[in-house]
Length: 255
Image 1: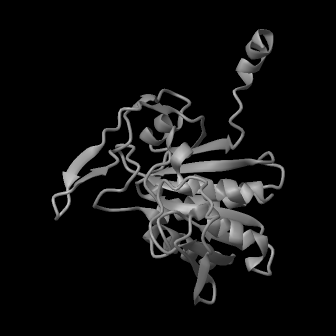
Image 2: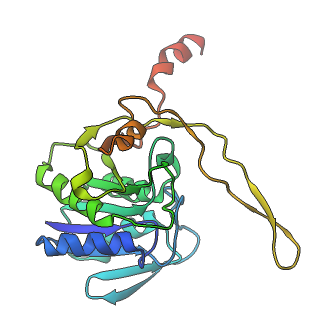
């Protein structure tokens, strides 16, 4: 397959490089285009008021200077490259994209941008045991997540995922032989209890950090949170349509 890979952790991130190497070793033709720096939580932001510069690093590796994940995929699929791609894979993200994470995730946004442009897309993330959106120091089993992508590719068919939908894949941070299978899931939900962290810079000015993600509360059986806790790969079909369809009838009656 001719595969385009992007991410939100940046072109030098370990996850994207292990994924690219694994797919190439499996015989796939891989082109990588990613931000020149970490753009986590960039969501679907496109750069519209400044020019974008693309630097070619190697024959099949490109970086977009000051670009977002969505910028990268948008450029790649709208004429930057002459070749046609069969699939877009975003990742391997350095941390979870579970539940509400998908709203903010640059990893998911890169995949959604590809799907918006009519390509089948997968977003893949490596999940810490505490469901953290960032990997802590320690052993990171990116090879496990890369092998899972290969497993999924073997089952991909043109009509497997509906138009405008992507597969959001979360892989437990364990060895491949410790995985307990694959589960098709729905997005769970976190508490919106993230606190800002106030600090001082070297000039004694007050600065703020966005705090960690909230605690999962809708994390029972059937959710992505539950699956990864069982050492299962979670695959959630998601889409960009944010219409609250269940409210349309009541609103029509009122208005």
